[in-house]
Length: 233
Image (cartoon, rainbow, N blue to C red):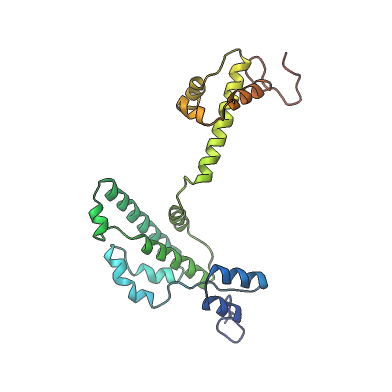
């Protein structure tokens, strides 16, 4: 029988895995990993065979098939995906309940608690580690991303603003090159946003600087000139 990841030749976990599992903190993990970068450390600490019994009632309470947990513990991709989809459906239901103002349903425990969602996620990830099957289903990825803040994260918003700001400067420069004085209203209409939104993207005087910089790179028709082209007349 092949030796499992993080196990010893004699059987059972190797010493470094035992040391991590005895104190599964990130501080301990980083220390062990830095001390021995090539060591095999099996990291699963959540779930286990017993959870199929003590979690049955909790899962059934929220209309989730408890038998899915057995598949998850075996790192079954179908079971993990189905559980992730069910949990996302429950998250959607909870949002609809909150949107309708029925917060009493949340208090009465009819909406799935976040701690249960997080436990299932950790259990799924640890099962993948324990079974040495690190192929993560995309349904689980979407669920994890949702719990970490969704797809509209701070840096994603910042990136979108940066791109819109650049586009605003380019449009303003193209208009200026054609003899049209750009305004926040004109640029906003071109980008499909309010004039006040365009204004918020720029510090005082920055819009004009970007406008003039882009204008210097455009010909009289507002088209960008080749970088090695002749200066605009």
